[in-house]
Image (tube, rainbow, N blue to C red):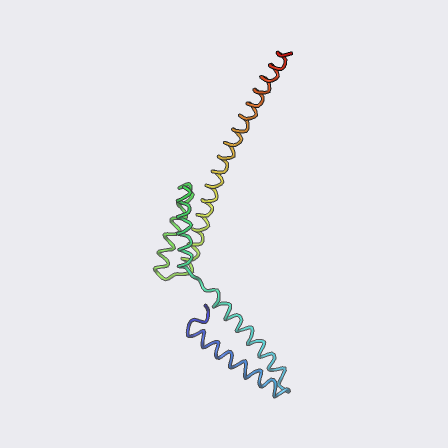
Length: 162
């Protein structure tokens, strides 16, 4: 979380104290109310910008582990090696960057790798579904042909019985 570091905790404490002072004085000294309101609004916008910047911290380790798990899924479904090669290179680069401490670049490469692995998995599943669909269509055609053969035999026997 964003408040786990000492700097962020100090900021929250000082921000709280400053807000208390501003709003306390705003209540007691109404002639300065407009100045305090402008000051408080500026302070709130600054705090929001600071806190939103801290909340969006990158977790490259998590991105790498997600990419690795997606890679294992791609291996399980036997995805095309030509489609997973680029993802593997990016994942390896992300691991190296993570060890060097470049978390943002490592997270970006890991996320790209995970997306490429997902694409390979989806493509492999689509190909498997296409093969199954072709097999079912072939079976359906053979069933229709079989039905026509049985129908012709039945027609011949009913004509022969008359």
